[in-house]
Length: 359
Image 1 (cartoon, rainbow, N blue to C red):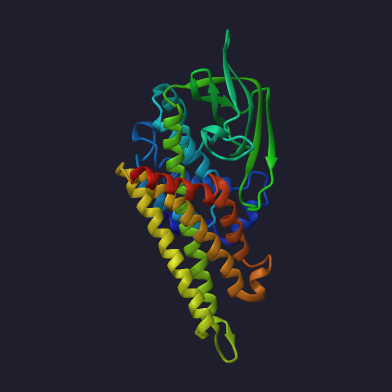
Image 2: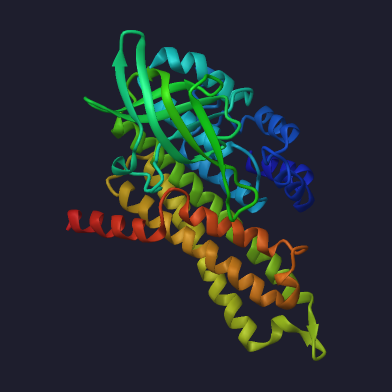
């Protein structure tokens, strides 16, 4: 399946396709999205009874490596991972039957509105509030950094209530909902700030904070896979370049300084891939060390991708700094991914805390 996905992206997800997609309003190619859905990628973690394949973290991580390598533009992480994961882990069979088949087929694009303007992706960062009324639940507040928030059909809004955190289904087209597009360093990424004023929400049963955290762990593994795949691809591009770039009558890859840089980057790439895959296996097998491995992958893959992408520009010389070269696209994705679900520093602290608790 990974090989088929790679071939599809090599054909319809080229650098030229990425540049065309990132210049559009939604930032993705609907035709490619339909092809991805037809392969089952959008329903990879959706149960078969809801139109999906029934895969888990290991399969998801491998697909995201391919997506990251090709700088895939689109709502895969938002809809096919975060929203699908949150619904899948919930206990709401009615919501699963209504929403998951459309997500799996790619016809419905869903996303999760969780963190406030602080962007912490923790329970402390939730600024949305839900209150019960005579006509149902009403939501008020803001959620920021919402992936695909400017064009998603369905919002899964995490809000605090008198009884704790709950998740609510919100139709993105209803009144009282204001969407503001946010700028991103990564031009392929679409983020939005969503403000709700007395907006009706339908509660998703069994989608409290422990379930939300499980969905976030799945998204963290997927993001680590994307970062690992992106770091490997820009490293391969750079190695091809230093093998062919001639200076002083010999390939620059033969110079000792370049050799050392390439060797160090290879260690980063291999470490990122290992960390992402190990975290996926730990999550799939519900190991006791899963929290530890996920936190490790979250900061290790983010740092590796950023370091490899930045060094790639340097090793390409002058051409690497130009808009026409793809190196900056990988650097932009690396820098944006490094902050998407929390900073590397946050996950280092989390990693240390897990180790201390286990000691």
